[in-house]
Length: 192
Image 1 (cartoon, rainbow, N blue to C red):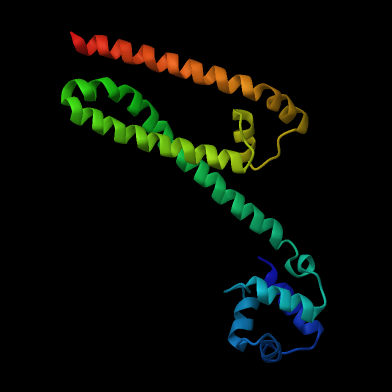
Image 2 (cartoon, rainbow, N blue to C red):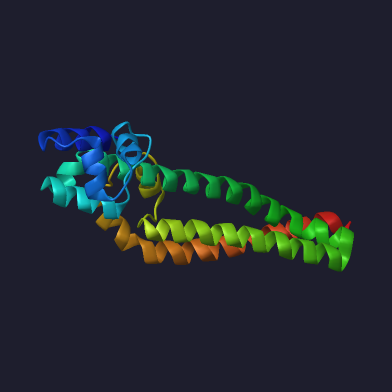
């Protein structure tokens, strides 16, 4: 980040030594040195004080750092989305496929184990939904745009908004029918 160079530039423009700046900021000279060499970063309170002392806005003081910070936060969210998606992608088919065999082989114990598996699957599904809602992503196209860190075209987003209520209802019905059919097939296979 460029904050260290900015602090040094504004400090030297005011003809302040590191020690003089440290005294005005109520920190040690080493702290100012660490800021300028980018070994540490001033907290928000110190950034506000620096902006007031240098008579510059936070945008000028941070010059370019705000965009980098936003990208770092977005990258963390993208990584979290990828992790949750991977775990959910494993749990969902295992949960669906394990229901009948677990109950057939282990009876009540198998049903309890399957319930725990279902609970874990639902937890990751809810985490994914919360993350998608926080970033206003609902469709596959929006998820891909978010993961590639690019905005979705506004017109396409409006088209997708119009389709969402129907998609969710149809998806729920389709998922329920598919799960029932799969359970029926598995039950018939393990009944013989």
